[in-house]
Amino acid sequence: MKLNYQVKAAEAGLTAEKVLRQNLGFSRGMVRRLKRTGGVLVNGQAFYLNRRLQEGDLLCVNLHFDEFTDAPPQPIPIDIVYEDEHILVVDKPPDMLVHPLKHEPLNTLANAVLYHYIENNTEPVFRPVSRLDRNTSGLVVVAKHAHAGFRLTSQLGTGELRREYLAVVHGLVAQKQGSIDLSIARCRDSKIKQMVHPDGRRAQTFYNVEEYLAGNTLLKLRLTTGRTHQIRVHMSHLGHPLVGDTLYGGREEGINRQALHCCRIRLLHPITGGPLVLEAPLPEDIRRIFNKI
Image 1 (cartoon, rainbow, N blue to C red):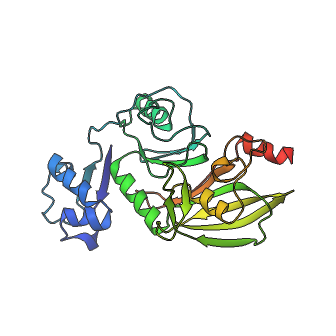
Image 2 (image 1 turned 60 degrees about the horizontal axis):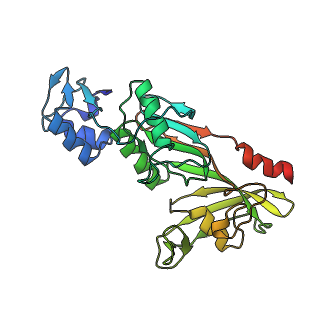
């Protein structure tokens, strides 16, 4: 996979490294790897990155580094919402890990994506930019190469990559919209459970009431941080745990997992810079909650 870029008049006289770092957004680590591998050609010729460019020069950057992810590919169907040569966005079902674990190496999103990559002659490296709990469904963004991964991860920090969720919570949330800015830390007596704690890492969640459901509330939520179990912990702390989320005080009411779904992602394409808005409909098990009510 290669990235071609023509030097503009305003960039004439800059070194190739400066154009890569400042204008194309390559990380320091990626530039070091390009130096080691001779991964940049200018006008079809090998080129030292400390040399200066001229207007109209054509940079060709190799984005492939013969890497691989040590997970066995499996022919598991995946629901692809968007794909091009730089990114993949999938609608992950519930009851699926994103990454394999030592004691659970199979049937994860990584296994499925790697099989898809191999079938389509794509570098077999799994680089998820956003992640979801096993039992949270919805959109997951995956970068197909290290440069796209760096650019998209940077967008998480700036808020340009925005994740929106739908959740069904117990009780009627009185305030129609609001924000929760409470730090989260791991519970000392648990390897999994998190809690609101002043010594934890800052976590911020915005929410809007979408609909009242006869004793429950459908919320749309947006994250500006990505702490473990963030929505689940914040809503439980407010006295409105998610339906089905027994770890944080919820009750199983027609669903045996937390009723949480990443329904929309907004981002800037890591190469073109164009905006992308991608959506995933509510899965069947959450829709059944509505039918039951």
